[in-house]
Image 1 (cartoon, rainbow, N blue to C red):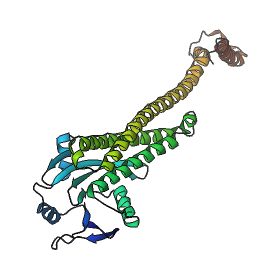
Image 2: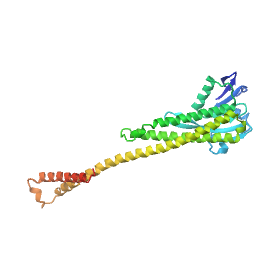
Image 3: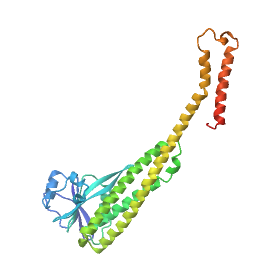
Image 4: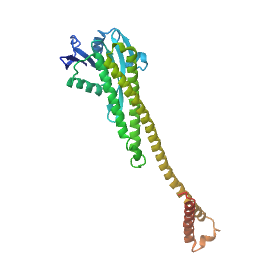
Length: 315
């Protein structure tokens, strides 16, 4: 599906593009979602190079993610996609041209959808493709900051719940989910940082002065967010180690109980085994007090062993 966002008279309007008809002249943003073969051919019709596919967008080397040609600036960027409690990273291809911006994605990205809706509700007085692209990345950085704050809030009480037997399973699940989220947030931050550095290095001549200031501010925000993500990574590792240590301690306590019980009843077992042997010359076999004597002896041996453990403070 191809959607054209047109800007005219300080208003943003939406138009579904028919590939058999010309593109609206006031198009400022061309958003392509899950392009079909015919739509990709249509886009290739006014492009000097082949339209990138999913594999091209997933390349990690800089030469594949940031480059320029006659069609303008080409950027592949990661965007965070919240999915219930987890977080997914979606690769989106951008082609920043002189007249309009092209975005192509194979998945729905709520952040871009929300940004496009925001443009329709409150359109700016003046809109250029470069400013539009920078504004989108400002929203992206702000979204990553919100996700980082969300992890902080989720971990606020985890330190106390680590030592609660009834909540330890939920704690392990929460720590695992948040560690995965933090890793993907950090990956998105580093990818955004690379994008902005490339634009400052190789595209700064085509950016207005206010866009350069926005990029500089975003870089400062990203630096601080990367520091926060490192702190969260260390905190999550500490909480995971604490949870595993507490679980091991609880298991050791249970093992200790079984070990002590086995040792306490070991003398009693020895007495019972001795008097359970089938030999005719056992002195107590025909003794009328043999049974209560053996029972009392077993209890006494168990009590003596238990008292010895208490004296040694092994219990």
